Length: 170
Image (cartoon, rainbow, N blue to C red; front, side, top):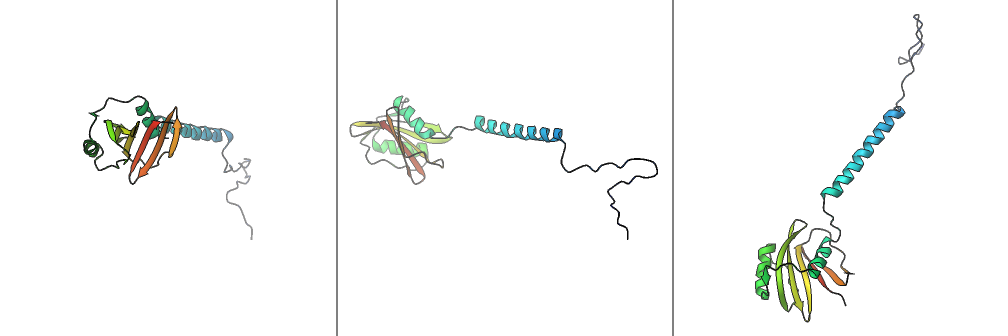
């Protein structure tokens, strides 16, 4: 019995030379075009992500420091603790945690940070004034504490809430 490979062209009577069978590997030009296209898509995707989405790394702490050093115009000026709590329910939609060491509220305003409503309070704790940012936690909590430009920053997660406190560092 004679075995013949059907894919191989044998020389026949018409004097044609057999054609080589193309390999599975593409030639260099196709490989380089494929590589360049892949790199272009990868670089374009990374650039698009970094330009479209906000930088979230410690954004709440950075905003707390900014509001502490340059206070905004207050929606409420010198409210009582009960008025401030009622205002927070209106801004945040439910009862947010109230720090027990607060003796007086200097001012309160609202902002939107990371597309979430945020209550910003300037409070007096004893003789020291500090700024509180209270928001439903956006997922990953920032580092618990740090000092930046003479401002002490503390983040505390309480249930679904995050409270960032900015105060003058000692």
